[in-house]
Length: 145
Ligand SMILES: [Zn+2]
Image 1: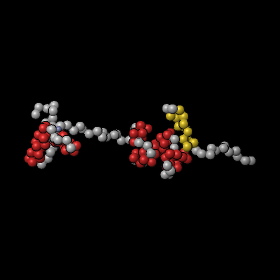
Image 2: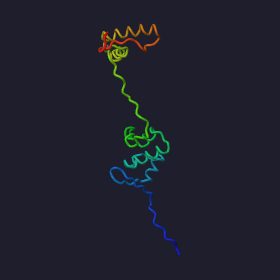
Image 3: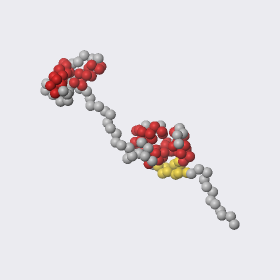
């Protein structure tokens, strides 16, 4: 008597419920990409799934984004709880009447305005006495000079 074996699918299939419905993940393609094949083998859903696998296995988020050829913003959108918080890259605005304002005039090749010149001289005096520019007086427009 022969045992009846259920037919196995030719490839392991993962069904994933997404906000847009159920999607099929080609795990062979995922495995190939994990092994170094180009990420363009993957659908968006498969890339999303692969990113989760890589993060699960402790790959740094930079490696995940690079391997899957997705931006950090996309990776963050997919897995917001798994990435470190973003640091703001926005710098504080350089304003006239500060040593930074004077430096900006120099960088951009524009003649320093009177407030920036005053701030520069005051900062140099401050540096001469203290050895640092930290805490140098400023002559911003919104402050009394
Ligand atoms: Zn200025």
